[in-house]
Length: 258
Image 1: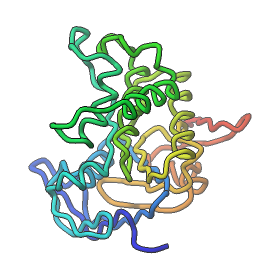
Image 2: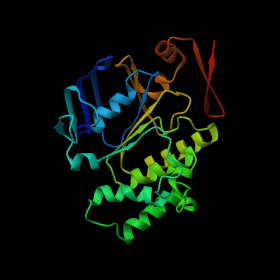
Image 3: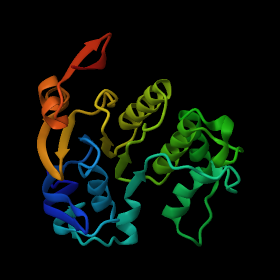
């Protein structure tokens, strides 16, 4: 399979209030779609922050075949896209949806180059794909949470990263919008040659493109394998320390708590 795109060996993060990650070993190859699943406080976001260069750590991290410290070069940072959880935005914040998408190109081109016609056309095509082209001239702060997430996806793809990190991208969205965002994520994985890491604590809402799941508990990897085994009643009951029954109906996962 060649050199892993992402490789962590003995990665530990220490903070005043505890150790959110301890002795993490993880390898991710080009083109994989890996889910990072676990309860709140398991270390999921911390793991993404280590990869993105937002977190100091102990241990060894290789990205793109090169050893990295917690600080990243501009070149490496631009090869990693990051979609955080939905954050509240002031409705008066003076940036339009189309301008927010274009920031993906600005970061790649640098501060002294303006996006050309090709970049603007690609940004428009991505907004159409995300079904938010009609919102191009709307202030970002006036969009719904789901609309802002779609804008975030378009911005991240315009950056043309090799790795896309997604931290609970469907959190706080209603079910219909969650499913729409997941459908768009699946489509992106089919169209773009990128490696995806998708963090979630909602094991009923995982993209169909996800074939591998890493389960985190108290900062440690307790499972790394196929999604069918990970998202099973027995595995999840152990992870969440509560009786959970997973069943399928019409191709969708449902959960029952005893």
